[in-house]
Length: 376
Image (tube, rainbow, N blue to C red; front, side, top):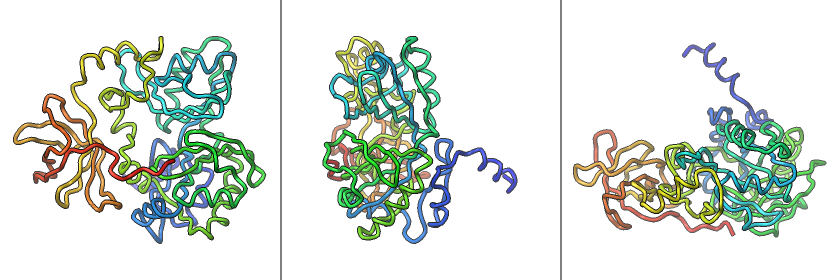
């Protein structure tokens, strides 16, 4: 690729409203879901950023995440009839992890956080690359009185994560005492924002949904106050190691249109008794029959680092594929999520071998998470 072609490709990527702040911090950028986002920052790198979140506090710009709003009479009931989880289990001011599944196959089109404001108002945060498709499917199914609005570019999202995250936000006068998977509105730097007790790291943390035009002011307020708490800016590389340690799935790897929630062991995010949701019949049939493969955790016995796409063996028989794999900074060993054939009959504690460029390395089957969660 020539420099001119590379520059042209970069200009087609969306950028966060905080792009200049990241540049000033020496960020290394990478394309992600159609956006140019910070991968890591100068002066620390992935290991320091990861450790900051596990032991102190870090801030991620995750403005690439999608944003969509569903409003109108019966909006919550409409969303509940489409997405997998049961919104009836929560009330206004609470959030829920849910899945947009293909109606015919049950495969996961996207995983989403739904924020229930009221019976007539639901805010959705899908993944960056899938936002347009989620919005398209909802709009196609929506009755005349329900409006689905794509607000992808209208908001920035800042994830403040780590054991000291509540201290930092409290110092800024923001609410911090609400329960996990709930949210409140507040004001910071003249911006009305939503403070969500959510995150993707396994630590105590919050996600701030901020109008895009106020993102810089809110970022500056956070980083100024954060100096007293040794706040560290963190990129998507550390976000990936953190979520993998927790066994949290990444869409496109551990969940996809070809991987159902039954296979991914995400059945807890399915309202099985609901009368309707996309993929209901296919998923109920797969659950009753038992899936041909299931998502499991793996821990390296030696110094091997499994990576996505690597094949797994018992003897000469291929029994599965790594979907997510990395070096765990906390455990200081390789860890992975993998789809394993149920016919292999593997149980926790059993050994499989991963093929790393023609070399076999031993892994132990285990149940995630790989570290103790502290989200609550």
